[in-house]
Every structure is written in C-alpha cells, then in structure tokens.
Amino acid sequence: MTNLKQNQQLRGSLLNQPLLSVVQNHLISYPTPSNLSGRWNWGVLAGICLIAQILTGFFLAMHYASSVDLAFNSVQHLMRDVPGGWALRYMHANGASLFFVVVYRHLFRGMYYTSYAQPREAVWLLGVIIFRLRILTAFIGYVLPWGQRSLWGSVVITSLASALPIVGSHIVSWLWGGFSVDNPTLNRFYSFHYMFPFILAAASIVHLAALHHYGSTNPLGITAQVDLVEFYPYFYVKDLVATLGLGILAAWLVGFEPELLGHPDNNIPANPYSTPAHIVPEWYFVWVYAILRSIPNKLAGVAAIALVFITLAMLPYRHKPGVRSPQFRAVHQNRRWCWFGVFVLLTYRGHQPVEPPYVFRGQFATVAFFVLLGAIRIVAGWEDRVRATVNRPRPNKF
Image (cartoon, rainbow, N blue to C red):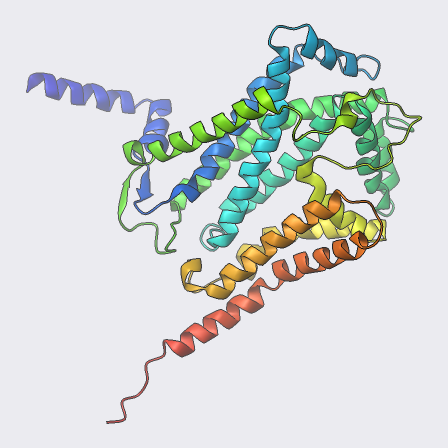
C-alpha cells in the first residue's frame, strides 16, 4: 500500500511538469468520442508527414547548392555519390506527394462530415491557412532541383503575379530578384522553402490546440461531449495501423517506383533557351493549373484561384447545418461526391494539351467546381426545410 501511494505521488509530481502535462492531456488522456472511425486518422498522418519532410529536408540541405550553375549537379551528386542519398532524396520527393494525398483526404473528410461548422470555425480557418502554406512550400520545393520543369514552372507561376494591377510588376521583380528567373530567384526560393515548414509546424500545433479546445467531431455529428474514452490506449492503435500502411506505401514508392509521381523533364538540366512543348506542374497542382488554363483572362484566372480559398474559408459562416452527419443528408452526400469527381476531372484535364475537346471539358469542370462549392448554403437550407416538414408532428384528427 505504501508503494502504491508513493507511485501515485510520483506520477502526480511528474504530471505537474509543463511538458509532461501537455503530453498527458493531449496525447494520452485526451477525451475522444468512442465511435470514431479510421476516417479520423488523416490529421495524425498529416502531422507525421510534416515531421518526415522536415527531417529529410534538413539532411538534404546539407548537400544542396542554391546556385543555378550548381543546383542540378548538387542533386545528382547526392543521388549518385552520397551513400543513401538516393533514398533520402526520393523519400523527400515522394513524401511531398503522400503529404498531399493525406491533406486532400483530410480536407474532403472535413467537408463531408461538416467538421467546419460552429463552434469549430477557428479549426477550419487554420486548416485552410495551413493548406495554402503547404501549396506554396511544395511549389517552391519543386523549383529547387533546377531541371527543365523547375525553371519553366517557376517562370509561369511567378508571372501570374503580373496580372495584379499596379503592384503586379513589382511583385514579379521582387520574386525574380532581377529581370528574369535566375540565381537570385533560386536563392529566395531556397530560403522560403527552408523557413515555411517551421511556420507550418507552428500553425499545425495551434490547429491541434484549437481542435482539442472543443473536442473532435464524430460520424454521427452529435455533441462531442457524449460517450468519451481516453485516446490511449483505445485509439492510438488505429493511428498506428494507418501509419504503418502509409509507411509501406512510401517504402514501395521509394524502393520500386521512385519516379512514378514525378516528371522526366526535371531530370534534364534547366535551359532558359529551350521551352518544353507541354509544361505540366506536379500532380497535386494540376487542378489549379486546369482552372487557370480554362479562363482566357490571366487576372480572372488568378481571381478564380483566390476565390477557391476564400470560399473554403467562408464555409463555416455560409453553412450552419441543423444536422451535421451525412448519414441523414442524402443530397449532401451526392453533392460532395460530385464535387470530388469534378476535382478528379480537373486533375485529368490539367495533363492534357490546350486543344479541343479538352478546353471545353476544362471549362465545364471549372464551372461545376465553383457551382458545387458555392451552392452549399442553398442546398443545405433546402435539406433542412424538407427535414423539418417531414418530421413535423401531424395533428390528431380523432
């Protein structure tokens, strides 16, 4: 009995330490809805992907030379001469693709289960900011190898800022560091790519703290304060299984298909005097690129991309559902899956040349994308009114 009391006192004194108490409250005894499914693993997987990208990027930076004359050769030296360098580089490159798979799945799950609704507006807004920062970080990262795709992709994307009135040309000049994409541009991008992951990590911690303030949602959409159990040991096993599955997929990509998600043009040294016939960004940017190419006006295309993120950020304020769970909202389920299908169609369209019939398909997918994303309030209000009419108690005639 004395030993038991001493152990309890020792445990209590350890938990009084700030760092250990944070681990205890947020990773061990965090109250979690008992009916969570594997669809809630994506947030944990996103955090693991971010940590892996930071670690591999840190070691890659030891061998990288941020000069247009040396960047491509430094990457090839890492791949061919440094022991294990090829694995390190492919882990980072394929890790970016897997990171976006997880992030897109996490975003779609949040939209499907209406996780953005009150009182979790701050959680959703922070998630949209993290998503935007992740896109910027990945774009800057794929410029660094300084192959053909890196050079011309940076030229195309940075030139979009010139569409902005008054300040557009000044922004482009600052990004380039001169009159064209050259060594100052690469140095700027390298600095940003090294800095952004730490900003992402800080934003992710705040995102997690905001989530734990109100508690996790659940598939039924009921209050998160009902039927709670501790996160450990009940739910860490689900996260562990999902992590192992993602690790197996990453190992297969790195070991057997390291260039599956890449592009062969980026294995050619950058040549400013040779323009590729068909410039296509990484697969996780292709849907954005398809929207840009579907709109003839450059300024309108940039505004459309900004509208995507603005619409996502405004979801908690535009849509306040009476019922969260999609299990009781058939129209909501169909609309979300249609939106996902349009997203896939845009991704496919971005890989095709700018010629009929792909131009019309891209324009159709762009219109459908914004219609399905913008009509959420109208459809949700109609669903709520129909549900209220069906569930209204009928007067007794007898």
